[in-house]
Image 1 (cartoon, one colour):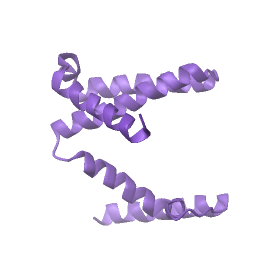
Image 2 (cartoon, helix red, strand yellow):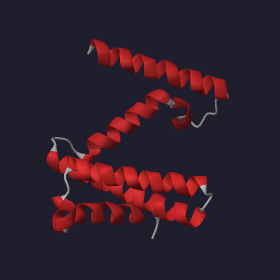
Image 3 (cartoon, rainbow, N blue to C red):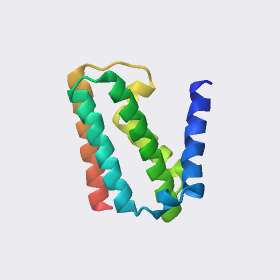
Length: 128
């Protein structure tokens, strides 16, 4: 299976989790985000311990849970998976245009540009 097929299978599993798992559906958004925090802590612990096999497993768990959270939130609120993906893609195209243009920046340039754009985004949100 190539990466796209693997991703499609994962996404289908997350969608099926919403359709067919009574346990998943019994969790509130708060319950699920608490579980997500626990998974993140396990990723951090694996990193701290330099435990690569466990890191691979825990990153996989976290990846599953993030996708499942997106699916759960889509079901509860009025947005789509495309909204999530296009929002993050637009954001990072603004903040890191050089990577989409396959250009490398010096570290200080990259950090400076990131902070400049992020600051501009915050100003736009404040002025609405």
